Image (tube, rainbow, N blue to C red):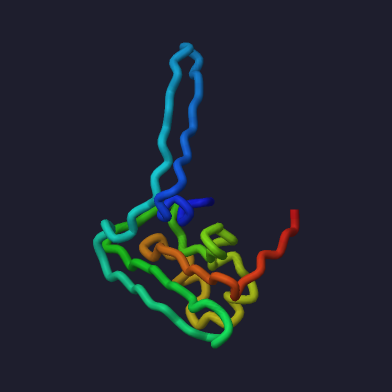
Length: 121
């Protein structure tokens, strides 16, 4: 959920647990490195409003299936939702679920101050 915050380098997330055998396990969270994925990388900055930040797209069409990394929208480093789950976006998307839910397409779209989350829970 906070994957892009880890890219900034000034944040460390450590998760620890004590398992049923009383072993203390420590896990360090690391950002996912999209550059290491084989395939076609699409990196674009899109300026849609002169007064607002550009949209930063970092997408990869991989040669293999990548589970659990569907394309997501971010706002200032925080995950908002999977692209395929944003109904207002999907209505205007020409390829809809064929593209945005495909397991070979992954990455993120950083919206900056162009997107406001809708809190429903």
